[in-house]
Amino acid sequence: MLRVFGASWALLLGMMLLMLGNGIQGTLLGIRGVIEGFSTAQMSVVMSAYFGGFLAGSQLTPYLIRRVGHVRVFAALGSLISAALVLYAAVPDWIAWSVLRVIIGFSFAGVYVTAESWLNNAATNETRGQTLSLYMIVQMVGIISAQGLLNLADPGGYTLFVVASVLVSLSFTPILLSATPAPAVAATRSMGFVRLFRVSPLGCVGIFVMGGVYSALFGMAAVWGGLVGLSVLEISIFVSAIYFGGLVFQYPIGWLSDRMDRRRLILAVAALCALVSLAGALLALPFLALVGVALAIGGLANPLYALLLAHTNDFLQVEDMAAASGGLLFINGVGAIAGPLIIGWMMGQMGPGGFFLFIAILTLLLSVYALWRMSRREAPSVEDQGSYTPLTPTASAVTVGAALEAAQPGTQEDAHADQKG
Image 1: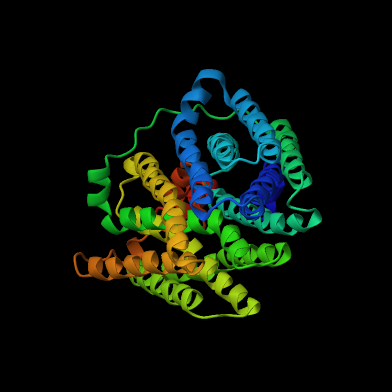
Image 2: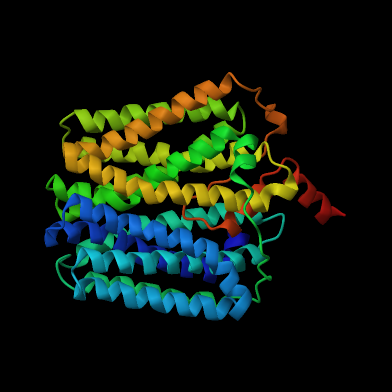
């Protein structure tokens, strides 16, 4: 792991700074929206807009890269992010914020594709799995650390937006100075949704569901905190707990997934997440208990995304992985767009409890569907399963495709054999 970090530390440092900036703006907007008096429905549109832009950016960035190159795309989109971040405070209007969120979502998707292509190119077959794991850790640490920065200044002022903008601007330096020429981005069509569904019905349904769950956690947790009257410090702790749980639980869940029928684990993790979320919705919990609920939900929901990717990968042919990664990301993006809109409506109808209830309903439905799928087809043997690779839903098609390839049975053994030969 240290050797991998030494080879890619500048890229990883730049990505951490990017996640610091993105983590600040995601939570800060939820807090600031409550201060500005925006309704839950209005904030749900604002939060959903990011994922709409992110989906569009994921689809269009490869074409931009092929036209003008990685460096120009990265610099242009990074500049858009920095400019948009400081405009939030200057234009406190939910419609303007929605437009800015589309721009930022589009730009972050493009920045991820560009930076991750450099990172993937720097890895070898032997180190790709460790590189992806380290990249996931850096992302999560960046988002968690960002929550602490929210307490440096008044969220009702300009300072925190400027801090987020500066962090994003600073992230360009290590990435651009260290980036080697990236491989050409090939035009890859997504696998047809009907075909992808036939390959892995549970993977498709689960990835769609987890898109909604993740966008709800990433976009609406701070809005929920503001509605129930949490302080800025308490909101930052609550949001940090979600991502800290996601970081810590990835590895034990991944270890289990490589040693059992993944559908059983998906069923168990989703059902447990539903129970914890239901407790958050129905019980009047003290703050420390709420932090425990956030830790558990994040720890169960975040690894589900990578677990569903690993399950889908068990039924893919090597030549289909690139196309499948594009299709899965599109399905996840559609779910992510819908998530804040639905949870915003639920919170508007039944109050803050709708936040946890939404997550409970989605994860319960996923567990029921996983149980049904277990009766429809035999699971591959544990020996034939690919390995679990920790990933977050922010990963681009570049990283998802690399993870699917690295996870194939025998990949690591083949890499070691090549080196010995």
